[in-house]
Amino acid sequence: MYNPKWLLALCLFGLANAQATSFVMTTDALVSLSMSASKGTSSSLRDDKVVLAAKTDAAAFVASQGEIRSVQLEAAFQHIRRTLPDSRDTDEQLARAILIL
Image 1 (cartoon, rainbow, N blue to C red):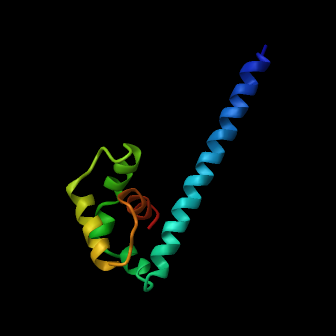
Image 2: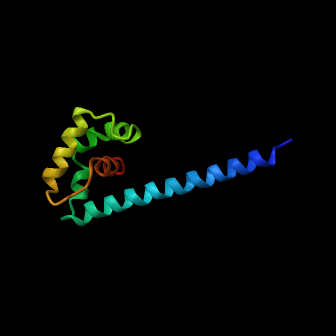
């Protein structure tokens, strides 16, 4: 009834997907922690209207691998960089951090 090769391929795909998800979650957690360590401003960003307004746009940015860039997201990037001037996070890292706020 079931082809063993197909079942093995499905299991391997599931394992690879779980590892990729784990990597993304670890990356997101590290970015969040680095933002929190910077003068404790992560909690203020969590309540910031400019940053929260860009959450959906951040998802589109990440999903499109940076191809979709909106005005709201650019404003959030600029706002975060003004708030955290010592931050050296990339746009992708900032977008992922916005998603987990």
